Length: 75
Image (tube, rainbow, N blue to C red; front, side, top):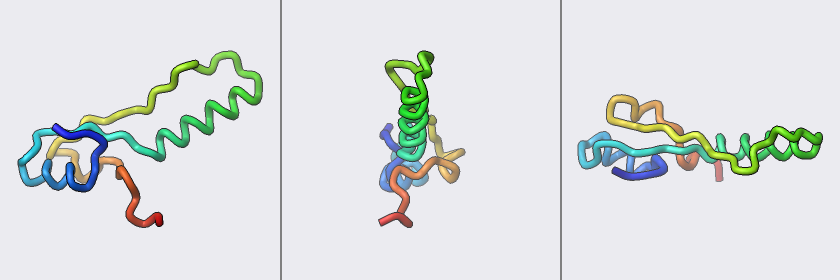
C-alpha cells in the first residue's frame, strides 16, 4: 500500500509490488480551498470549518485513470 498516487507508487501498483494506493489530487484540494474562500467572503454560513479533500482508492484495475499527484506538464 502507498499513498498520494505518486509516479513511483503507480508503477509499483502496475507491476504488482503494491496492491493499492490512495490518491488525492492537488487540483481537487485547490478547487475546494478557492470555493470555500469565496463562500466565506460572500458571507455563506454553511461552509464547513473542516474541509476534506476527496481521496480515491486506486488498484491495478483503475491505475490508468488515477489523478496525477504532480502534473509533469507544469513546471
